[in-house]
Image (tube, rainbow, N blue to C red):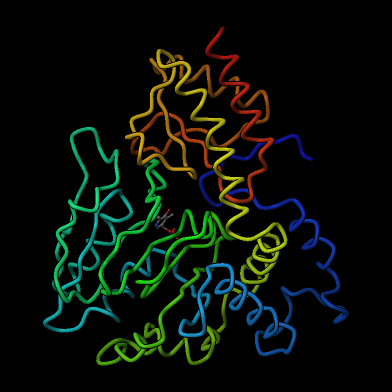
Length: 360
Ligand SMILES: *Cc1c(COP(=O)(O)O)cnc(C)c1O
């Protein structure tokens, strides 16, 4: 549409159809004569938006009414704090699997709150390049929870299957791959996702919690930071990020209309195969630091042989309207974020350009 292919890591691309609807409703939301931006969060109109977004999220994740969904503020980073504050009781241990910069940050916050066990840490002198195999996990029997980052946005690795925690509540930071495919959530205790990567715009964080865990949240936890406080009000204890939740609702409707998580998986695999295909075809030009089985379908990372080549590559990409391809400042290289909303045509355009560049 705009001729731009948006590979930004987050905030990231949104479906053009969603942006079109937002524009259409901007001056008159559902016949109210005002925009959703100007609407009270206590109004019937906003309540409907909030309830629809919450129920769609559970439905698309395949979760039943033993779970509660809500949209909170403070980003995924506040969840690094809120999770142990609420779920890690005195005398309990939480297991953390460290597979990237974000899980390392989550671990750091948890250590300030209680007893933690590092169930695995895949960092080497080459950084984080893989997801641990199931037999590598040193899980604590009877742990309060097991925390994993399902997709490592910076290093480009992803859990293709979530670990079996044998009934211990699994806590998933799904910020960069929520709804990228259907998962077996039978051990799920809590899932959180900053919306700005795979769910919508910045400003809201999706939190899904198994209802029985709500009773753990009390004690000396500040009232505003208790999951129970927000869950009892459907996320409307205080003013939420209304506009962000409204756009999330539209993105979730878009996902549902296209066939849900199953359809997203087909689409995401198609995109990822296009890009990884070129990386594998030209090993002297593109090198992936990531172990093959751990490759992320959301964030594809690669290096070029020299900083000069890399600059030339990014320059040529920009001339073709491809933006957001520079790797995270902590790891360098290139990164293409292929979130649910990214059209297949964008991945195809990138793959074609990579072919061309490699052959030149
Ligand atoms: C971006 C990201 C975060 C941090 O999100 P904020 O909303 O900026 O706090 C946490 N975890 C993962 C996996 C991320 O990709």
